[in-house]
Amino acid sequence: MNLVEKMDFIQSRLLLVDESLINELFEILRKEEVLKTKLIKRAHQSENDIKAGKVFSRTEIEGKTNHAIR
Image (spheres, one colour):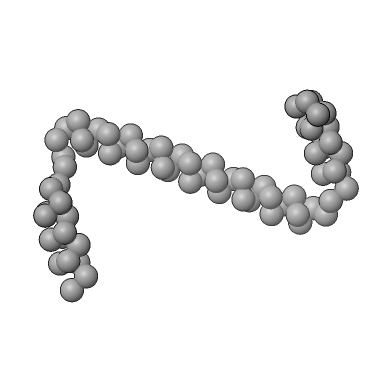
């Protein structure tokens, strides 16, 4: 089955399902896109921080983590 046939098959099935199911699927896909956008933004910021030398040593991170837990 090629891509067009698969898309036609899915579309024909979507016409038969309850609207609540479509709404649920829509929300899941929308949340995935929002998460993907946030993760990409964080990755770019991390890369910029590394290039700028804004990094912590393992000891510093462990110290900050241990201090925050107490």
